[in-house]
Length: 351
Ligand code: SAH
Image 1 (cartoon, rainbow, N blue to C red):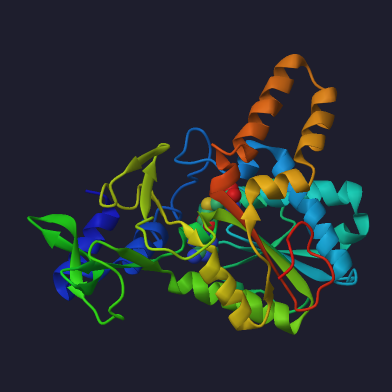
Image 2: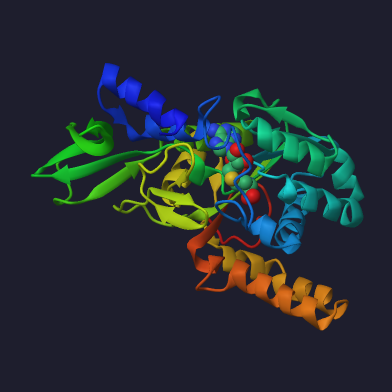
């Protein structure tokens, strides 16, 4: 039994069944045994791989977007360049490398602020960025001021609650013990009598709170945020909670603390959070649409023209992974939030 399973069983033994958001935060963020706290889960040998780890072009194109946002903010001489959940630091390293070449004034104005809870990943980030950043446990600790914020595959890792309609009434899905093993059960709860039996709906209180905080910051100071994650454009019922280990889906209760737990991001709820804080939320588009509009094909062609045939094939494959409709291209969405009245947010449509 994993150490975190032991902890969770004891808690359930004392307090009774546990909400899934608590289960998720313990599995992922327990200070000693949590999944992210004790390992680097990224890469081909890890449990999952992310866009910045697939291709440097991902960070390069996001860098170009950031420079556009900075110009629209009036090119402030100092601003916070914030990243939430930077993983190995690859995205930020690619952004900084790009702007040092293409927009040196942006590069010298940027104060890099990383929000990361994992000591293991902080160390990876320190190595990738040669220490040129400040680290925070939470967005609450990032100083106020003009800001450009990026987050890739951060919001999917935040804890969620799930509700299920069963026998005509709503229940919260909770983790309990049955026959000595972790089992999901249902606890009655008062919710509006909508929906039909079997419906599962999700809510992400932490995600909403962070979106609202980003919105507050953008309302107070000039700024822009770019959120990339897998998820859906419109709120809809559905169980999207998943556990992943070694690039395979496993059961939620299999070896807690050793599997990545994530859920799909509801971009409609995210937009509501940004607006509740006072920011403008732009309609989300697919990662495919975003990357193509920012010049993915041209960038890949440019890299290919300087490469051997074998490398060209690799570049072609990377582009497909990021943008093809049957790969990450459609499942992943990109949403921008900005200070109200910010002049440009290409390639997002009008609000
Ligand atoms: N953005 C990176 C990593 C994605 S994995 C990439 O695209 O490769 C999720 C990241 O969020 C990890 O760095 C993890 O340690 C961090 N994380 C998860 N929950 C967090 C929380 N509550 N606060 C801060 N960071 C968190």
